[in-house]
Length: 254
Image (tube, rainbow, N blue to C red; front, side, top):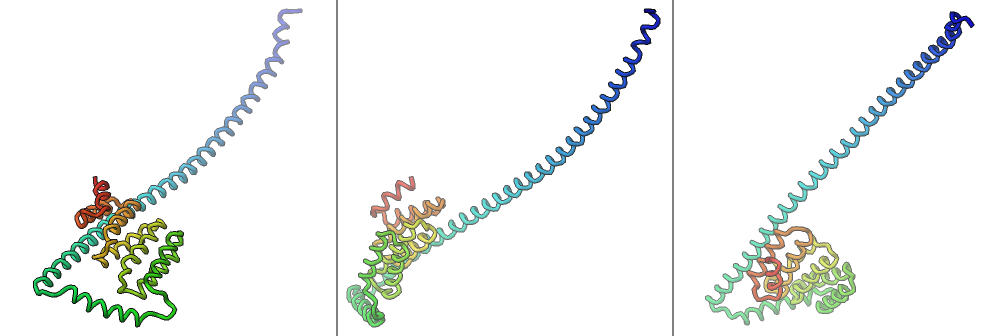
């Protein structure tokens, strides 16, 4: 074969190869454009998703801030109320101490006075006693039996009936204390704190007063109010240093 003819034999192959390469480049370029378009779409979607996530995060952060602010305000309120209650307790005790000194100075016979004053409430209570209502001792026993069975609402009904029907009863302080105890046992500590306060402020001579102070302090601990709990423990130790609850309160203070 003539050597001059050989190069012309390979010319169609080179032309076809060149055409195939250009076609492949067009396909590759088209695929590249598609990939770029898909990439931009994904970026746009990712940016939108990130924006939504960031918005949710910001909302959660603001909500947490509001919760913390509310908790701080509640703590301040309880602290203020605790201070006011403590001052009220001390004022009542101070007033009673002054009255006792005045009675001693005037020479008033306490036994004679108490017998005269006790007779009238008893008569009025008996006259005001509704028909079909059992006596105060039976109501207290009924409430305690129900409380022992964890029937908290029925127990409170018995104690409340006693307090309303026999407000001057010698058992009224016990009814009020066990009424508070029913809320404490039910873990309704905020309500228990208020009901124990009635024992503390109203029944100042009650033997239930030291334990009411102690359990009120425990209730403050249960709701996370350490400041008021410590204030109540200190009040208990100062007012009733020899009470069994005072020894427990000292350990709490330490």
